[in-house]
Image 1 (cartoon, rainbow, N blue to C red):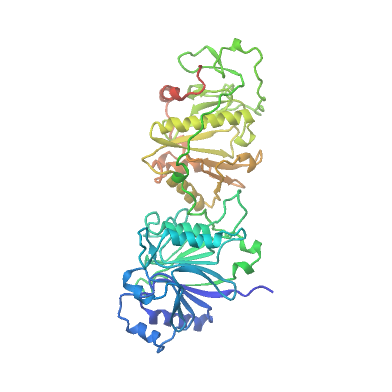
Image 2: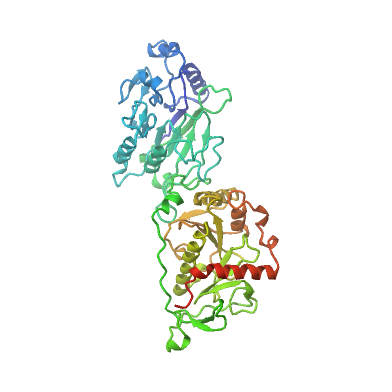
Length: 538
């Protein structure tokens, strides 16, 4: 027999308007039937006279539902909460306490944290500290069986909660809110998280609590911020919902992902992830094929080891790449290649300026032989692709830029790994990531974050269509194309106002220049790139 759901109400800042709140609850219950609990976050007491509260405190009036409230958020209201461990304030109205876990007879688990964030010592009576948050996390997360909690109650919003989500209105979630609450929400994985204090209503799209393709599926979290009771703008301050306690649910039902689920807003940011990270120096390739230099020594053959051809009588023969079914614009041996755009040649790959590039230094990493996608590359080609990626990152970093890489294996025949520099002053890595995820959601494209050191070959099979983005921090986003996909999606995101602010350049055909201009740009790039070129002779 299925477990009957609990029917709960959550409320924002009451601010002493008890009659308004409880009259509204009575009206709802009269219309929709009784609810089991009312949970209040934010400021329960206000700066209004105590006459109204006295009627409830003395029993003249009674709350129509069992009500649980959080503690003070300012010095003025500390006086109402005498017992830090919680106590009954009036009939049917209970103060939960400064922090802890409330488990109902049904098994419903509610974690609560009263007050606002403080990094000061001693911590004021209306605040919580990093130690408070740490103790809550340790109390719950230390067991291997821990999956999450049903409900988290805090007064402040968690910082960054708007990342990857729908608009939070006038509240800037990158500046507003508590980073400690974000940390708590990350660890506790609540199914519902309620907060207040900002005098507005915001129901964020549900977000994942697992890393796609790295961790088993887990339940999603819904964050709901509620407005203040009786606000003149009639913003929502009361939220009704039904919930079956997590411990009574079937796992498959619990981890079902809502159709509008987003990435976790609190995942380690690109900036944090890059701290102390250094790109290892690439190892030299040992295979020995011959190509012509494009520098001032043009015309003299060189080997990939930097030695003359006669010094290696028995060169290692790399695996022969597959042959194209017809003429290919990107196989280096093909007469269709516009060789004036080629700016560097390695053993297995080469660099070329993009035709109709987003900017002057927009380049492509391409395999010399015919490969359709990264998934199909042989090991030695993958190794050199990684060399080029690492070298280009260092090159662009020296010029005050970060680079974004993407590949679209859809309606293309030869791998083109697009590399676009973005000025550091233009935006952060997180801004770029947000732009990709936001625009993907707007176009109903499921863009998944994948593990930093993952191999695309583990995710996509040869021949599978996909779109893939790699940020300068190593963070990666992946979309498996099932039917249709906008061909210019990668360019559109980077050209948007949020990133390069050149929306008129989203289509490469609108960006073409003369061959003479292309030759000038290519010549300049070769010269600038030379100090970083790992293919040059010793």
